[in-house]
Figure 1 (cartoon, rainbow, N blue to C red):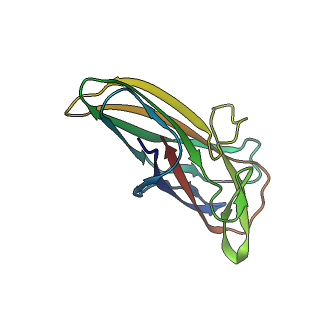
Figure 2: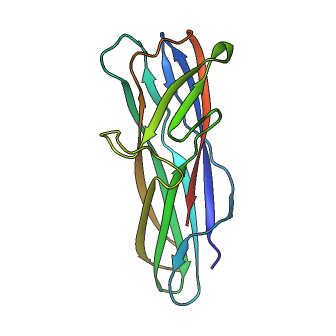
Figure 3: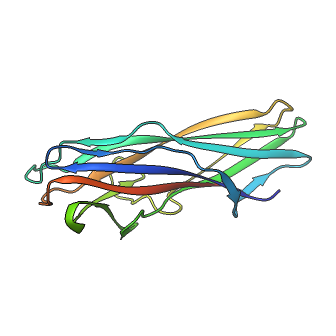
Length: 181
């Protein structure tokens, strides 16, 4: 069975000083990639990915002693259709760097060509940056003719570090979520 990828676009919009909002939304079509869906017999696998709500940091004040933190959730729904076969669906969830910056140094683009550094993490401790293959999971399901669906939610932890004195205004970036299975 060929591997598939599903990509969802996470759109970010932000305002420095007065309010900083990171928005995530959208769903793109599926295309081939490398990963695994294994079982014995005839079956098909598919996945859908969505982002639950915007990742809103609220008001960003560079003089605050603590960073601006917040979270959002990526929901992955895997569906397996077949004739009563036990199937393992394995997948990874990756977040790209967006425009301008790298995965290690993501940036929201702002007025006059300025940028506001931030990042996305896999844990609440915010020590492991979520990269191209930041999360992986698998589950076993009994395929049915009507389709067996399994839903898993993954939290994305965002942080804007303290002490970033930037030009007030709107900041934005687009991050693509890719689920490869």
